[in-house]
Length: 268
Length: 279
Image (cartoon, rainbow over all chains, first blue to last red):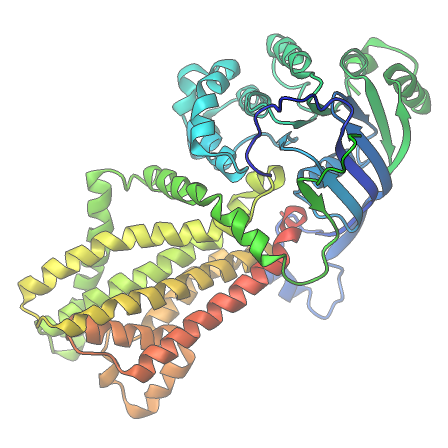
């Protein structure tokens, strides 16, 4: 990711922002949450399997154009987060190719933060610098970020003292304030209290523009129907359906053998 | 799509085992050098080394350690002397550069988990920052030693300038070791718990409590297995005794440092794309 570009003079509307071609992702992951040498030595010669292979994505083709607000839906483990991580360049694909035409800002499930012992301020700086922003750019956006997150003096307190809502608010403001070409938001709209939910919802609406592509991963169907102009449904690593939000969402809900109910509309 | 074909800003494709494109990697690392500076600064601030007493502690800690070891040497060996004390202190200071780099580096990748899972960046920045922090902590101890050797009345001479290439070699070694151990810690998280024992062993195997020249000939083979041996030997000769170090020692130290650095970096770079799923 290079530095964030200033909006170009010509409209980028309908140009491709992200092109995902025949994407496949398979990875091996450690079974132990904390793999240790001790455990390895103890299981030596017993032939215990140390890793598990995960087929996260399988031949996914997806073009996302500027001006599009794409909602991504699917059950847990459908590969939504993996797809977002590949687009963001965090996980390398095992098959296929991903082309990204613009700067990417991500708000993934874990939220912002580098070191919980450091202050929110230090974490915002470190996160921004790691993402390739310059110190000046971060400084320029910082007040805006702090204000939007409504943290007050807590911005200088260590992040381990934050509540999960404060965490989520800061994470959201960082991702939303930097004005990227492509913004990826993973299941973050459902965090925070009602007031902040409303605020972030409005911010997302505000961020919709002709020269920006938004990708939202969410289980909140009502929100997606209202905010997106395109929805993609993933299931077991494959793209099932893509198109008009209400059509795809209805198909997805039917697939789940669930009727319409307020609970599902809100969160699934 | 626009009329003219556009070049994508980023292309992600499957990687074969081995190194990423190094030129591109270096470019992206270099463009993030402010991260390393900022990371070191906030880490030092967190450990309170930005305050006067924090800095004092930085110097005091190895100084007291050297006093304790000196006591030990005098009691056991029955010999003291300012040269002995100078050697012990200077060697401990340089040893601390290496050990701080290792202890800071070992968890650098695993502690950066949140950042790694959320942002794409050259992961090697994390262990590099650990070494930078260790080096920043080393600088004041160096100044203290210069004052100390004046008080002790140790000889001055141009040969002391050899200390600079020795520091450089020690830095390359520290960096390589930090990179290597941070990678190992991703796969074996308990390496961090073994580290204090490894460091302690390294301390006793290195010419710190004793002088390299005082070692029995049959024990001199130690120097071939301990990467730090020749580095510390050259260090003591130059900065304590104000004598030029042996060329062979310098070359051997450099070879070890570069070797560890290359192995560590290769290991790290070829594995780092897998870190996100391993954390």
